[in-house]
Amino acid sequence: MKKQRKITKKLILQIIWVICALAGIMFLMPKVDKLFSQDYSSILNHISLNDSWDVTIGNDVYHDVSLDTFQFDAVSKGTEITLTRTLPDSWDIADGTLRLNIRYAALSVLIDDKTIYQYGYDRMMENKIIGCGNLFVNFPEEYQGKKITVQFTPSENNAFTSFEPISIYEWQNAHRILLTENRLPLFLGCFLFVFGLMTCVITIFTLASSRKYIRVLCISIFSICMGLWTLCYYDVISIFSMPLYSITLLEYMSLYLAPIPLFVYLWYDVARLEKKLFKVCYRILATIHIAVIIVVIGLQATNTVHFPTTLKYVQMLIVCSLLYFIFIELMNLKSSRASDRLFLVGMLLVTVCIAYDLISYSLNRYLGKNVLTMRGVTSLGLVIFIFILFGSFCFEMTQKIMQEAERNFLIKSAYTDELTQIHNRRYCMEYMDKIKASENLDYTVICFDLNNLKTVNDTYGHAMGDVLIKSAADVISKTFEQHGLVARMGGDEFIAIIETSDQEEINRLKELFRTNIEQKNKEITDLNMSIAYGYASCNPKEDNIEKIYQIADNHMYETKKQMKQKNNVT
Image (cartoon, rainbow, N blue to C red; front, side, top):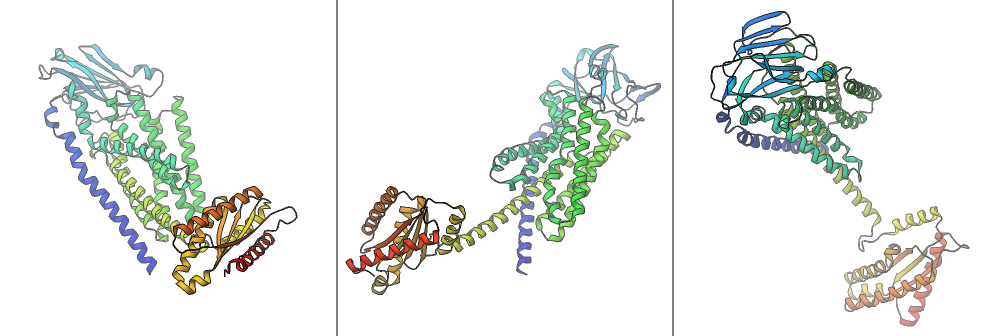
């Protein structure tokens, strides 16, 4: 019952943490959004060119086409697609730029049949990936009233089935508008990337001291991959003037590699189930995924098969991996771990978000429909998921640290004398066993007996006796602890085992010991501490530590007897 209350309390704390994190995001998001969109209406001045196009696709001709509604069957690689219309007679944009969106197609822009811009033909001739995203073409006022022709030549099969809007913007505002339209993916992508990068750098150093932080490293690498994918997929990274094909390659690489750190993260949960079938399935799925990624990247690197062609197969593999992850977490729910429940919630959320974007992508690419228009859904789900992962890890690590601290405390209590806080008899016996097992022949055992303890207890009380005992422990530790072991054997008896048998070194320590006793007696009024001691060193004739200890103890009692006769000590 007590354990169940503890688990419930932990679950409540984790839920509160996640709620606070989400509340923080919800509080900050509108403020960040306002920074991007506060002047959006003032910079949105543009000329839409979505209507009145004549479209030629292969041998098919369509007149007076609106790009907003026009759809066509997916075309094969190399099919010529031409759009033609007359530009407006005037517009109030001085330094204009024509914004075009391409999807794996070479592009030509002609004004009155004269080419003013081309992109991608050289790469298509070399069978290299062209990429997809926004292109901005310089478009001055002198083009007013002239005929514009836009030619697309797809470099991949089934590249697209509809056209993106074509508009003229003011050059200085074109990229700002792009960022404003994609402000949610921009913010989430930057957060995922920066968070992952910072956490990754910190974790790499901490892994040198403990492997328990490997899951944090997995979270950070996953966050970096998904941050890059978000920035590339929504084309916001193009503000850094990167070529479209580089952005596209980075987008696919980050997407394909992202599940690998999740596989590593999940191994702990799979192993905890202790079922061979689950481990076999894990290894098979992980091996297939890694092998497919290696093959796909190899095919792209040699320009044999491009990433867009293999995308649907990798997507199916990612979906299978997600379903397996969810299944494993469902099985782990039987362990009643609160972190598993949160992880499962996160996985379900991410799965729903990914499904949303996959459906949106498929509808747009294969059917030309933009029914689901909300941007950055997967990224938002991933941010929440990473918060859950990181929060669960922090709570788990906190619990482990507390358990380890408790275990260390119990161990220390078992091997530490409560009054003097030095080692006790049990620890000394185990230390002797270690010396015996190591066959070390270079040590000295020193036995101590505190004089007059009974007299002090009877005369001044046990409180003063405790002061005497602790003072003796302080002096012995100060003198001998840095050279080996110091312990209280019980009552007024102490022991030191030092790692030397050199007589000169022993004589030096004996002199230092006497000096420290005198110093302690000066520090505490009326202490009058006196300690009898005897020692014996290991030698080739006698190397049994129990016998060495007995010899040292006998010498100590001889010394105590002599001191008693001389000074009347007890």
